[in-house]
Amino acid sequence: MSSSFEKLKQNLEDSLDRVLGGQYALDDVSEHVRKLRAGDYGEKNFAKYMVFQVELEEKDGETYSGTYLRGFEKKYESTLSIVASFLKDELNPLLGEFPDLVREWQAELSTRGRLKDEYNLKHEGLELTFKVLGGGRYDFKDDNINLSGLSASFHLGHPSDEVLDDMFPLLFKKEPYSSFKGYNVAR
Image 1 (tube, rainbow, N blue to C red):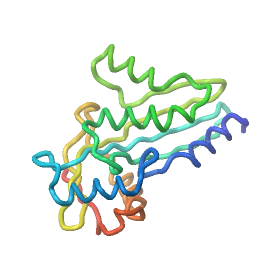
Image 2: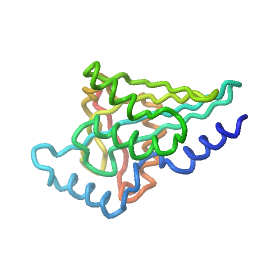
Image 3: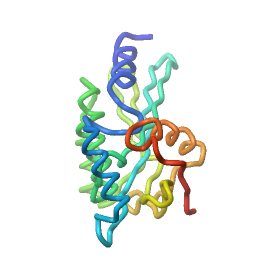
Image 4: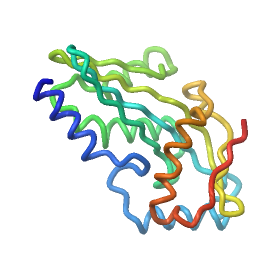
């Protein structure tokens, strides 16, 4: 196992929260939850979310994989803005000498007008894969989080039940989500 692999793996494990993005402030997350529960977002009283997977593989076969839920820390205008925020503000700063993932992503968007759901970057014997596993929108009702819709930008629906069953118990351990009873998926 190379020191580059170990260092990047440690950065990913130590620096990226699995369920709430960026340098979120508890007061801001609490305000988002309060507004969504109260219907204060008006006719668009829902928010959007995305689930990503980041895989790191060394040429000798050593691997690391992390799954990340984003969109529950504040209201984003689109699933594209969730991806942009995750790549630019969270993932890219950890990648060190890897090619700029944000630049790759923006180039794809500008040339094709639509996005792939997987990107691969290679650097000095390491391969980093960024995958969009799914997303959609959510609202709150009866102390449950209700998932619906899809991510039109990526032509993807919700992630698999297995992924959601892994992510939501982690979210429910965080304030202010600890008072929620569960989640429902409209498929």
